[in-house]
Image (cartoon, rainbow, N blue to C red; front, top):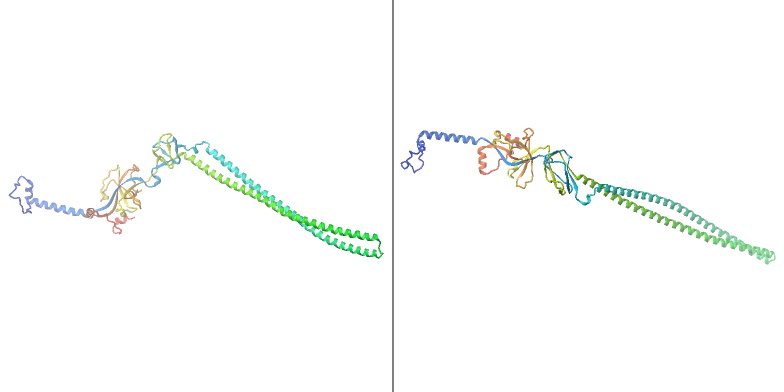
Amino acid sequence: MLNLSDNSIDGRIDTQPYGAFGLLKSRYTNAWLQRLLAIGFLVLVAFAFLPWTQNIQSTGQITMLRPDQRPQTVPSAIPGRIEQWYVSEGQYVQAGDTLVRLSEVKSEYTDPELLERTREQLAAKQAGVIAYDNKVTALAAQFDAISQARDFKLAAAANKTIQARLKVTTDSAAIVAAQLDLEVALAQLERQRTLYEQGLKSLVDLESRRMKAQSAEAKMTKAFNDLDYSRNELENALIEQSTLASEFADKLAKVSSERFSAESAGAEARGEVAKLRNTLANYEARAGFRYLRAPQSGRVTQALSMGIGETVKEGTPILTIVPDETALAVEFFVEPMDLPLIHVGNEVRFLFDGWPAIVFSGWPAVTYGTFPGEIVAIDPVISANGKYRVLVAERIAQPWPEALRAGGGARGIALLETVPIWYEVWRQLNGFPPDYYTGNDTESSKSKKP
């Protein structure tokens, strides 16, 4: 026995009943124990230098890789009442198949002839637009006719004014001639009176000359009167010309006003036609919303609203469809401390619920029953649970089991760097994160970097 203590038990305790003391006192036993301890120490030292693959483990669940392949709820686009179901849970449907028929619950849409009456209103408004267009055309023709009549009458009035002005000129010349005739008649009368006083002419000749002078004076008076009358006619012609221009301007302004009013009413009618067309299109689209159709091919998995006569609100989910063609993926969450070690393209090994596996996380080469995947997306924003979401898709060369379904559990093991076991034990004991190598010193790091 090794006497390492100063307080020996020899002579104090009877060791014969205890076989272990006898074995320890044997020199053969001491040698065997020493060899065993030495071999164990050497094995432990050799084991400490074995390669160990660092990894990050996390749990997740199976989902679909593409958003359009995930389970999709079919909501009601309008508030209504369920009248008829065309499918049942578990039934396979094609894209566009009718699923449910709804009826209207709002009073403004319950009229069964709503579309036909709206079309009649639209046709009436369109006829009104045509009538306004015809009225505008007629008023434009009337405007042109009045303009032509104005031009003709103004031209006639201008000619009449020219004639009156010429007549004034003629009457003015007649006055000059009458004045000359009067002067000649007065001169002859004076000479005739002188000859009568001298006894050279008779009284009859004198009276004859006096009558001629009076006739010349009457002609001159008549010429003045004719000139005044011609001047009055010229003034009347000018006034008539001005009056015609004013009258036709008033008529043209009235026709233009009526035309503008018709154009305004036509534009308003066109606006009402456009509004009615919009309303009709909305009614037609709403009529189509009464039938819920499958947005894509898949299987009906769950009816969220059941029964006949049940009232649903706008946007209420009616049933759920799972697409028939899906590409599976696994989403799991990693700690922020481990996020710098995860990259798109890294390999991840999975243990799926229901598929037994023998896992050696540090030796992936001897692991059995796990399935590989490749990281395809990492969320840049942290999730509500304080971790980052990572999306992993299956590899085409190494597909996952066909019986996997969305929502199933999965345990992911992200493979990192290969280090000695003693280093990994030291790291775990000190709580350090896995090593993050950015160099190209090992082939494994080359293959794992994206």
